[in-house]
Length: 347
Length: 283
Image (cartoon, rainbow over all chains, first blue to last red; front, side, top):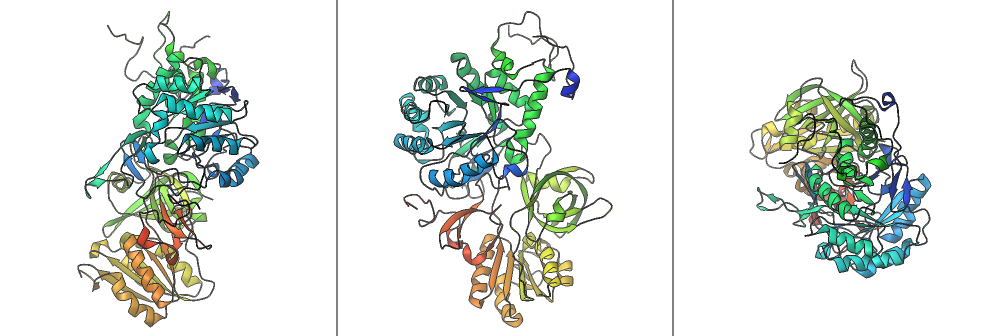
């Protein structure tokens, strides 16, 4: 790969002499590009389709669906935090039957590549959800949300314990057609995320989605009580980005062959690039969509630009690039706001 | 259909304790109806405040030197609204709108009573104009804690058949709440429909009075929102549907205007046990 020595700046991709092949792989499925929505931040696509063409991004990840209709948690459900937010929605949704009949039918009609996210209260519910989806045509992949912090017993019993996580993934994998990837969504609120990741992969997960929200709490100092009715909520947004990149890094280092869908605070193309370089094969844009409803489409074009700037011809060449050994020659410090020249090493 | 546009601040004027911002936002005023709102990003492109702030549309101009504009009323309540209030002429503002479901309008020239609490009164001015072009009688009640918290009394005077003011401290108008004066006005003007916008307890009380008078009631609710466009499920409240079933509906896309008699005011901030999908229910 050749690398042009170029200064950082808004150089249009066309002037760089090459475009970037953005094709991304996610658990055996190929996507035209690596930018997806994040479950819970795009509903079932309809609302966002007003602001950008949702058929043009890598895929739409639907809000985690449960077996029965669900009203969610009481309000207040949200608190703004520095560079982020806490949410405590509690998986409000129509239940799997209504979801298949209305939401999935609309997505199929619209021609949207769709990753269906599922969540259960117990291992058996995940099995039933997978069985309900088994005969639904044109599902790209299934995301198994074993890490929602806003359901009974914090949902974390699955993603916090390797055996519980593996049991759920085994059931879903067994009840899902073999050509449909099963992706396990993991929580960062664990002692060793690699251990959970490994258990999920052994149980048949074709990919991993990293990370779900971190559990947080805000006290309202006027009422002097927790601000959310659910007391705790899931922290998302740019505030959690370094935690997410660390998780992607650790899991990719331990399991380099396992595709990772990276997410957590991605707001622009440079943020997305961090995840790719850390080892994510694709990324999800979540909370940023609340700030900018066209964020997924914008992040995609910005990521393409950032890859071109760095001389990448294919997205796949950049996946995990930050794990490479020492560079023979120091690379130019791209975007070096805080340093210039070779990256300094710790003594 | 809502649009996302990079607008520009044309000017800010003080109205009592509030700031009224005039913003160019091509595509928004053309589609705006009374009761619609806009969601504004605050703090600039790298802001640590991620969530948009929602404001009901106070007024629109369709053409002018700068094209179409929208007016919104901002009450400074935190760093986000402070940022908006401090903007200078020609500063960019990212606008998403018009959003939500507007007020339902009568087909006949009925007698309408508009009730606004604080700067919640903002959307009632466009509504009053629309009602008057339909030949409706329009009476207005504005209430607030203190005189400076009343919104735009001057314009209200101009457009209303009668204007009644209440303040909690009696600094102007009748001392007390808007609900203290409603029964008398409703009987005097034979109110057919009440339109109300303001704090939730006020909307609950206004709904109760309107119902006992036999008037229709339309309320524009204030729920805290994260996205404003229907994806985050933050701004829900229990609303009874045509089928008699209560659902947790999003105030951003299913509202902010609801029939007052359909909202379960006593059950706000709860999940009623008989709500669709409530814990333990098998709806």
